[in-house]
Image 1 (cartoon, rainbow, N blue to C red):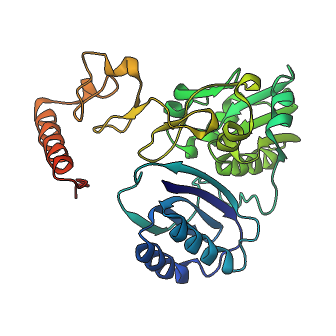
Image 2 (image 1 turned 90 degrees about the vertical axis):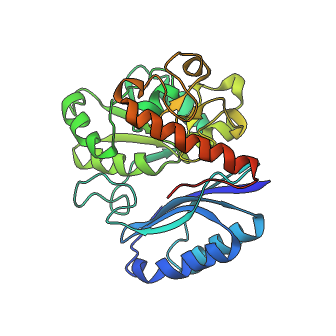
Length: 300
């Protein structure tokens, strides 16, 4: 069984460029895979590996000295959910695209799952899912607004067009692990919203801590790895990923005539021409051959 560790923290990380190679080397040494983003505003990412390797990497990150409040969440996978290890240098660890917005300066009120349940049932509260559209459609909290975004950089426009400081006195936001709504709450406070709340640890923490019989969550939570979606108790869900467009596909989607394993799904079928379909079929054939030989085909 492999450990999957999702982590982030906003912190002033002036030496982030110097730490790229040591972290990459340590991950490679221990067979840890996934993605970590380093920026002046902190660290963010998800990695997977054996217990010893994860402990070594997390121990090194904490030893840097500024990550004393690392938001850290573990789950498990039977097979490696990532193909490679990438430590990337970025301008932001979660890209909002608005200069000056930082949770280290201003951030909303954190709520645990029990407090969250109570708040979002208040009719005076607007509940906003800060994730992207395809994530929302896999699962969300009952009554939550869908900003209908394709990227997080579109969130400020959604706020400007749909949220009113004079009317919306209480705002509750959530995301997968907590990082997007931390930055979103900072942005909304800068816009003048006074009572801004967000779910600490995100949906992942909620699904682990909240008993299903008390849960206000409906559906699965999208995760950015080969597991695709998870359910209560952090169990792996029933969604799969379309190999052409990466869109999550349900059991119903897989029964659709437009679904062809490794080639297309109902979301991308109409965008593919015959040439693209043939290339996808050839790639899928190579994947199956690799599986028969006992190794993963990871492409270019």
